[in-house]
Image (cartoon, rainbow over all chains, first blue to last red):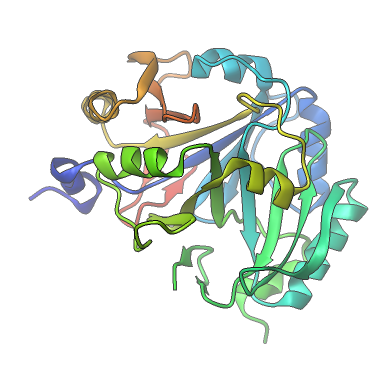
Length: 151
Length: 151
């Protein structure tokens, strides 16, 4: 019997995202930012790729020009239509994480506040300009293992 | 006692990614692409945001200019340094998913093959130019619930 991990392919591509790679110009600086936020990596100093176990998936930092080449795309040079989100359990935690990002040198591109969709969020960008929304969505279930379930 | 979901904040920001939002110019076209791949959403026809439960996290499609404004960033207009990955259990599954992406109208920007890091992968872009690497990484553990664990 096929495992659940492979059984889906007869019906199409499984709904799964395993890894988000963020292209960076200054790997050391980007790595330091996430480490100052409290993130831990097993990467050795000087490694050219830095993996963070981000709850159930993986976030990686890698050279942006190498990532463009590896992905077979042209680099537009700025933001390219992808925003990440870090969901938390309460509005107060949104404020707390935004303050930690600010203290770590992140740029707050939207101060925390109520959102049009009935939640509460703010946005910071990392030193490479990748935006993270820090959000409390009362309609979603945030699970102990870091996963999130649509309401 | 604080739950695991909140206990981390004294030590910094939890290592967690909850949601990846892909900005799109043609929401209907992008939605159709992922649906042809086999992804399912609870969004009603005509909804202006489309959420997919992607294993343990969420992938959303939303208007790209709205996302830029909401994120407080300028749109560079092209690729912006983020590549997603969908990990599978075998090289043969990489080939299979790449063929499904090709059949759904995705552009294959790197045909499947062995990689410099010892795995096997290919890359497609969705109709909006967002790249997905489809990868078999023998050093990572792909779990039944769709989560991935660093080796």
